[in-house]
Amino acid sequence: MITGDIIKDSQTYLMNTYSRQPLVLVKGRGATVYDSDGREYLDFLAGVAVNNLGHCHPRVVVALQKQAQRLMHVSNHFHIEPQVNLAKALVKNSFADKVFFCNSGAEANEAAIKLARRYSREVLKKDRYEVITCFGSFHGRTYGAVSATAQEKFHQGFEPMVPGFRYVPFNDLKAVEEAVNERTCAILVEPVQGEGGVNIPSAGYLKALREICDKHGLLLMLDEIQTGMGRTGRLFAYDHEGVTPDVMALAKGLGSGMPIGALLATDKAAQGFTPGSHGSTFGGNPLACAAGLASLETLLEDNIIIQNVGALGKHFVTGLETLKSKYPFIKDVRGQGLLIGIELDFDGKEIVTECLKQGFLINCTMNTVLRFIPPLIISVEEIDRLVNALDGIFKKR
Ligand SMILES: *Cc1c(COP(=O)(O)O)cnc(C)c1O
Image 1 (cartoon, rainbow, N blue to C red):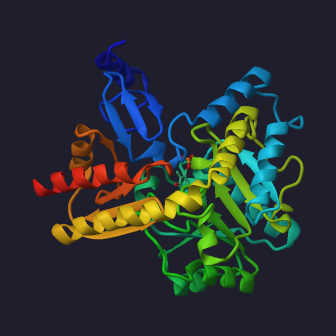
Image 2: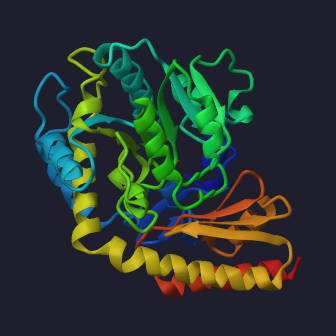
Image 3: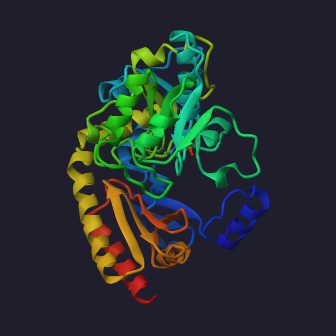
């Protein structure tokens, strides 16, 4: 089919939930993707922080091919070897003792919210159900996850939301203290807010949240769906602060593009779930888990996080800081590892379009924050190419 027809059919047959770029992507290798007309683009969006190893990493491709020939699905009525292998690897490399698999980020947060309520009621024998979350957060689109998401625009027209959430400003410990009451069972927070505009809390924020949770007997639940799997320069962002959560949600980078989500928990918190209390038909699917294990092993064995992410992130931010000193309409540059944003004093949509024309995929969130979340295998030279292109685009404003 020719490109124009695909786009036309896309608009005819798909529900109108996305404002898509007029582009059909058909192929990817490393940090480069190709459209249906053969044009190439450097990918600083990476499937929204999913393709951490770049596109079609050979090790993940081989793992998928092998698994597809053996077994694609059997359900959780049986033990599934790739699922066990991935759970074991995640436990070995994190704070957690136990893993629950699902298929997306929203589902991982659903599981977290359900676990927190049930842990409080069934294990602690306390009738508590409120979860504290932050303004500007993003936890997903299902009813529980979107109710946890404290952003008006995601609720609009969908009310009533699921009750039992209390919203506080991000990076405000006093507000958290004040929000805790006899109904509170957990705090759910992103270590760095991604969709909310790449907001990085003050040093010590997570540590203080940990202390509040310990003081009141609450679960500290981290949404590391975007920050996890090496994105911020550590395997998990909580590593930067030397604190551990009770519960953590993962998805995005976990499967290098295969749909998979996971909820990780300590043995203690995991007691909230018992047979029959929660489940998923596809959760822990053999293909998704094979991709997950190959991705995690590659990240660790190829030393990608330690060797690349911190240094590349610094280099990238330095380049963007130089732009900031030249262009007063750049209000802020912020980032942790390769989760980087620059805040403009105007709508960033036109910059995204201009970048696209010049062969770069980038993203704009919260209207004014250009977000850069490239594959973790991006090169210094590729980063420089984008920074130079941005310089040219900004110069013309
Ligand atoms: C993307 C994202 C989600 C939602 O994940 P889906 O797979 O789209 O459901 C939740 N939390 C954070 C922090 C995210 O970045």
